Image (tube, rainbow, N blue to C red; front, side):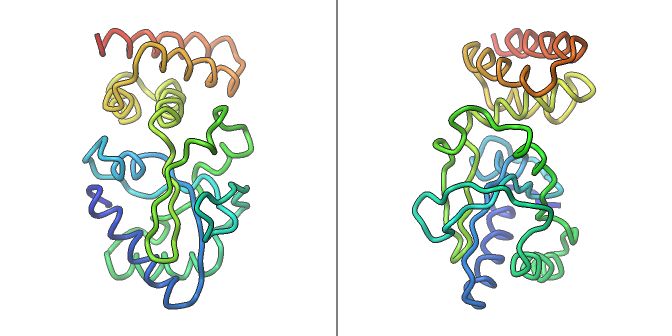
Amino acid sequence: MIRGSTDAESALDAVGQILQAEGVSIAIVVIGGAALQILGVVDRATRDVDVLALGHPPDADRPRLTDPGEELPEPLQRARQIVADDLGLDPTWLNLGPALQWRQGLPPGFEDRVQWQRYHTLAVGIASRLDLVAFKLYAAADSTGPTSVHYQDLLALQPSADEIDWATDWVRTQDVSPEFHSVLGQVADHVKQDLT
């Protein structure tokens, strides 16, 4: 388990050190609990670091986002395994779990809002707070109610009513079923009520 922003950043820093020693530069974009930890929004444990996209060229100030494909780049897989062994993490603690979202479509303007941080030769793009609101609203609408970690993360982001409306508009494009839209509307209303 990655228990807080320091642990998430320590793990990423260790990966960056390994990549630097190998003379390799890689850029990734992360979302989910680890992104919330790094931004200081939550301090809860998370099992993994979710990679949404790669960035090219990796040493640019603002790498251009690209489809991550089916597997992390080989040097990143090697570094991930070494860090997993050293820190006692799951072997797939750094993974492409959310990569399908890249293919479904990202919130409008996502790439322009990514905040980049460097860990040696590993560039890590963190999804913006607004985009995390959208992703967490989507996940909360697809989970089991207000006790879910996604709903609690959404509350921790403290979105405004306008941000919830913006996120709701995007989430509706991801699943067009009337049943999902009904649940989404209920979740959005609950968030607004819980934050007033």
